[in-house]
Image (cartoon, rainbow, N blue to C red):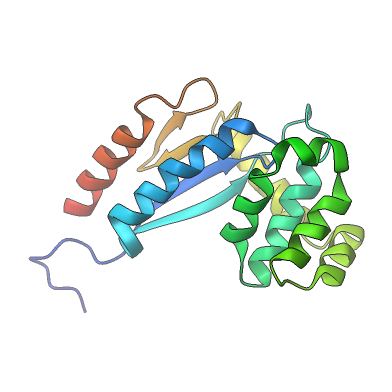
Length: 171
C-alpha cells in the first residue's frame, strides 16, 4: 500500500539502448555506475539492444547478453564484453563464449544459445522498438518519455537523466 503523501515507490525506468561493439557504450558505463550509486533500486536501468549493422558481432553479442541475463549476470557480462570491445571485433563469437566462462557462467549453454537463436526475438523486438522511438545510434537513453542521444556526445547527459529522474521520483 502506498502512502499518498510520499513519492511513488515504484522505480523510474531508464532504458539504455546499447550495442556491445560500441566504444561509446563502454564510455557510458561510468555514467550508469554513477546513476546506480545515486539512485539504487529507485532507478530501474534496463538494457535494450540496438545492434548496428556496421558491427558484425553486435547481434550475436546482444543474444549472448540475454543469455547472461538468464544465467543471472546480465550487466556483469555486458561490462566484460564492452571492456574488450576492440578484441570482439577481431575474435568474434568465440570471445563471447570465452567471457561467459571467465564469469563462471555455463559457456556451453552460451554456445548453444548462439546456435539455436533462442534470444533472437528479444533482440529483434528491442531493435524494432528502438527504431520506432527514432534511436539511430548508441548509447541512447529513454527516461520519462524523453529520448537522449549519447551516440554523438555524452556531454551533460548524466545531469539531464538525473534531472528527469529527480522530477519523476518527486512525482
